[in-house]
Length: 501
Figure 1 (tube, rainbow, N blue to C red):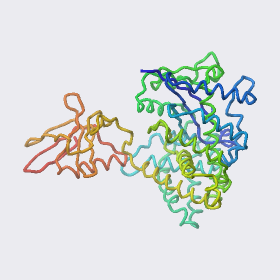
Figure 2: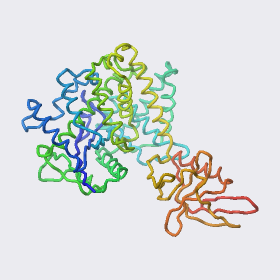
Figure 3: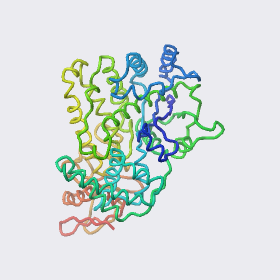
Figure 4: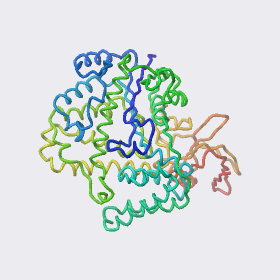
């Protein structure tokens, strides 16, 4: 089996999150980590990239590198439509380096969310409170409205943070009363948050964490069944010391990780450029859809028609990026985000929306309405994501065993047709089993994965236990996973019962 080489770089990274950082005019909330890779038998992208660098020698910096910083954010004010002819051709040539054999993984991490997670680290999902939804709503409000008095409190007087947060949400509820048709859902979420905030008093501790991008990448490697790999991380900071980034990668199991100088590794320069292009598109979207003030929050936000004033080259940039992000090397963990990932959802929506047009003329023919059409499409994607976030059941991909079965997250073989699942043999009286998980299929057929002789096995349960199994799944969907646990199955007078010990 060939070895895979991966290259890590990042964009919009705040080495230290401070009030000055967050309140800066060019601040962008998301930290983007990018990893590109290929197996050593298909590394011809390196040769293509060196030819690309030669063609654009005039864009190299004093170190002889072409960095993503040479593309200004202003060039992405209206997405690819803002690119001048020379930069559009540059980005087109760069994206043309990739093909379907290349791996691309990236994560989008909200810096504000990280602070919110620290504030509510003691709050978990239960039957009464969806803590994830609460954290999402708080993060989204702070990202969208960016209330400076609250951001300032985080850094200058954290002891007042909770009270300022309460005041902010109450003020938003009061403002929304005059626009209940547009802000009813938001106000309900803010009212629920106020109830929770009454029980919180400890201020958050501020310190950036690097785990999330690498956590997602380990899942990507597992999903792609890649075991023999090397991860090269762009070396920054003191050349004599190993960075926090490298130490974090190794601490979560990416042992084959090393740091290197980007001037010596073209793969790092490729990763830097792709990270820069995606982060600038993300930031352009965010700036266009973000409220400019708290008072602006009552207005509807749609993309300016200038986003859709595209020529054929610019439209093809979206199509190329669509293939790279959405089509080639498909994987559940190709992109990774935290609880708040609206920017990522809208970014993917933009790629899908632009890709369905056959020509730039087709877009421009109804350019005044494209913002409204895209807004409806993006809202639909966000609503789907919102529904997924409300369900706490694991939605990670499963490993196929053969054409008619798969391996579930407990390691047991499960038949796609539940009727083929072996029955759990229950004798008269009571029996105790170590149950790892419980499920139901679309026909409400109940199943249980049980530890037998040290091995996980999935069994079909009697139909009479369907309601019990459905309730167990319902608890898990609300964040209360009751398993693994010992369960007493009882067969008495022709009836079946199940009780968790």
